[in-house]
Image 1: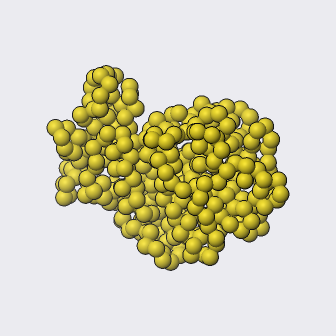
Image 2: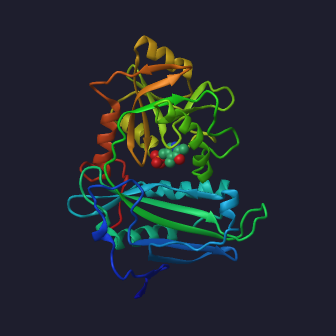
Length: 356
Ligand SMILES: *Cc1c(COP(=O)(O)O)cnc(C)c1O
């Protein structure tokens, strides 16, 4: 095992790449991981020993706090390779800031900027061959942090682990998504952790999402916890509504995650002269628009699928189908975003970030 050190990070080299064992034409999202991972521990009041090493299992005590109290946060970002073999990230500064915003809410110490970016650069360089060029292909990057102190006392941990793992991903077509509008369950509440990418936010959504699945729907659109009157977000994606030719999305708040894709769509809308309103939108307004034919589109926006068009929604036992649009905003934003991400178009907003 050869050990090389760059500015802060120690690198332990793999003996042999697993690259030839991967079928890039048949990838299941998030199942195959690259050769390397990043690991850094928080101990004695500071983040230390940042290391890149061969991807592998962790050994943790069953009393490790994260298992008991869910003190954990994560991020999701992607790297893309263009036809010349250059690799780019998309707005990584936003992911860096956001993981520290999430960490603060979960009482996890802030992670240093230089470690985060040095880790990303080094990892992506080492695993560069895992990033496939071509339409929709990418390397999904998952930074996360968790409480690693051993002991089941209900107090914040004094030890943490920050890690980054990476998985090659294909253009992923979710198909048209059918959604249920939440009438009983809630994802987040005022003063809660809805704005944070906290692990437990996802755990809490699985049960209501399973109920929706049993009825033939794939996702839930969450409403405000107080009255279930306002449309908020899709849980792993922010959500947009097109009524007439106006795009509407809820404002971010302590209940709604500030998505990078969401803000990029809003910027592109402005750039394209599409009228966009960031305001609270009532379920009744959506139902009315569906009934009178002015509801043209609903789509989700998030890093994993970029844009996911919604084909129908269910509310109070009634299913409303959304007719296919010739001039679809969802399609247009998806193409424009992917063209920027994969370096096929100009980048007027400086969103591309070369890494390797
Ligand atoms: C990650 C996430 C999103 C999408 O954010 P992006 O930065 O666009 O990937 C939206 N909502 C929730 C709850 C999320 O966790």
